[in-house]
Length: 328
Image (cartoon, rainbow, N blue to C red; front, side):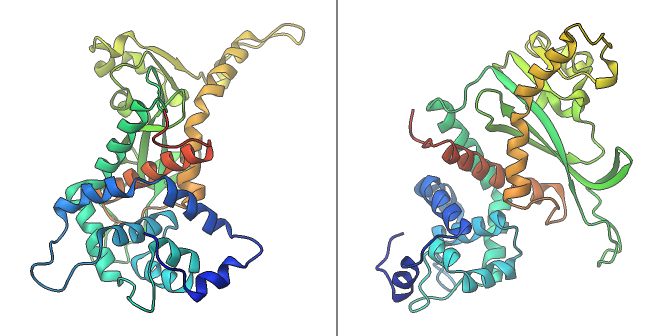
């Protein structure tokens, strides 16, 4: 999406430094396979034979990605493009010749992606390319889950909280929301499987769905203790043969004298040194993209958003490692 430079572009090119937002957008603009993603959306997009001509697919896709990367509402996304030169440059909008798509258009585009499950198609397509090019090595998986808070207020039209969310107690704190379970490649730290449930669903009950067919070893924190005894694991020929390296709880480790080597804690430390890779994916989602609280009602809509976010998180992690999607 290259255009002739405007006076604004020339003025901004004379700055001493680029902002972090502008650098981030340039990285994502370079690594995302735009043509492939547009091709996935095209069969489901309005053809423009009736009504007003539709906006370009790539333009709407870029606007949608800005929304999830910076955790913006529909009106805030439209306003941000007017306010921010970096965002306007990323979308390729020139105020002299065209208008910014309004919030209603963005809302309809998001519903189109949700209705057809296109974000999951993006996620699966990117992962297939990463496996084919050797970026994602099979054989080991790290499983983990995190709670995403949801609004607990009943000040809405239904006078009730989201029925698909649930409350749970973590430590001494009660949380209301949903839980995101992910399976991460043990070698590269890239996410390969996503599951969403209510917050009261225990981590170990979803673990079997996060394991790939050719995994030989699985890492997890103490929340996954006893996974070998689960019926879906015990009765499955493949899952029952996997080596489960689950961290033990600290208080269950035996105490040793000051002069001896604590082998048990050393083993747990080695497990944790591998398992920590799963936290990097959550860091990008929560700290980089600011997604700590659900945006929509229902698991389906929030799950669809998570597929898009983890797809971009995988690509961003790949770019930060100095690698390209197509390089073997």
